[in-house]
Length: 151
Figure 1 (tube, rainbow, N blue to C red):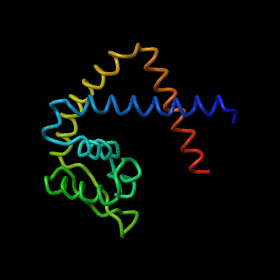
Figure 2: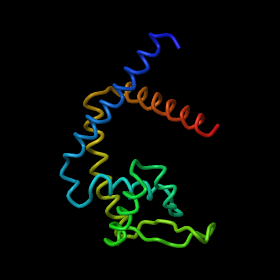
Figure 3: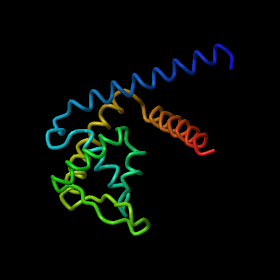
Figure 4: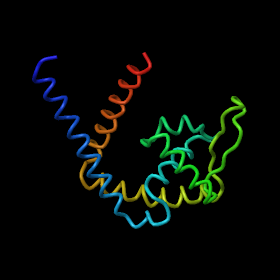
């Protein structure tokens, strides 16, 4: 890889990280995070995308927390009756995590407010065409990394 390409790749990576941190910090200051933390919401949101529930292992692959952190977070959400564990019909040793009606309500309520905040932050900085380009580039990058990891 030529030096210019390596430099550009690393500068792009740093820009991506700085943008993610800046946006995440801004969104974390919203008033909506009084009922749930951003990490708790991330778990509820991730589970909500799986109508048949989600195994703990699958959850840990989709969110950025250690296995210990996920286990504790899931236990807290279960204590608050926002998620429930049910036996996995495909694997007797595993359980599936699902949202309770209260968990689904909290995810939708906070998710609606969060979506409005994300829209404000993103649309304030980028034009619609730029948002489409950003999405396409991020999707392409993620797909490439997934392919390399699976191959």
